[in-house]
Amino acid sequence: MPELPEAESVARQIRAHLLGAQLNDCVVGRADIVREGLSTLSWYRGAMLEDVERYGKSVAMGFRNEGELRYIVAELGMTGLLLFHATQTRHPQHVHVRLSFTGRRESELRYWNPRRFGRMSLLDRAGLDAYRARRFGVDPLTVPREEFVRLLQSRRGRLKPLLMHQQVIAGIGNIYANEILFRARLHPNREVQRLREAAVIGLYDMMQSVLREAIDCGGSSVKDFFAPDGTEGQYKNRHLVYGKEGQPCPNRCGRVIRRLQSERSSFFCPFCQTNRLSG
Image 1 (spheres, rainbow, N blue to C red):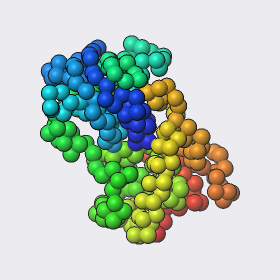
Image 2 (cartoon, rainbow, N blue to C red):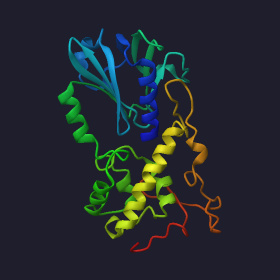
Image 3 (cartoon, helix red, strand yellow):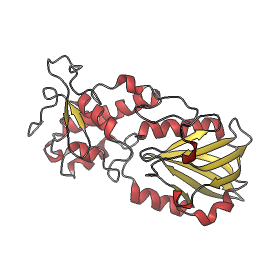
Image 4 (cartoon, rainbow, N blue to C red):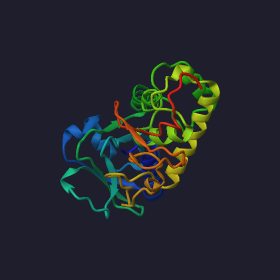
């Protein structure tokens, strides 16, 4: 948490509220929160925010200064948030970076990250390309169906860990992997190499559907996620299996949702998501 839908919601709000603003100052509270590029910090002062994109679970802000485009990339990680000035935080001591702006609706964007699993990076275009290449696989919202099918047919191992492998498919974490697999009627431990092409196509369509619906809802505020303006993601109200251990299956099959302990907790229906050898 946050995952792709939350990061996309963050990027959209920053785009709507700050695109075209001038960055007047950038204050870094602790040096270790910047993964790379800290020595270039002064370049960003006076630059204009020209572009905001999402890559996996990260948000990249593109700044133009004297004809050059450089980027500030914020990893949301487990607990990272990007918040506007008026949004309250319970523990303000965990605001590690402050970006001050003029010229648009918001005057400040803060990077709040209490557990510091995520970092910020200050990158030029070549640095951003290298960052993306080593960190992110295909984007589940933009990868063509045929490419997704070929990708899964070339892999081995269990299905849910593959969906969450950021260097293979970027942006899906535990919440949405659970929801996608339940709706696709696939067991979390199904062996990828044993899936028929029709099942992979069904998985692709369900992946797209779940992620897009979650984005429309502003993501899922399960624990600490808030959008920059402080609003909570409402897709949590549409979760069918995540966190529903012991509750009746929403498909009304007569079984209850179970919890499978592996790398991350998996919630599934043992009837609707059987772990067959083929299918």
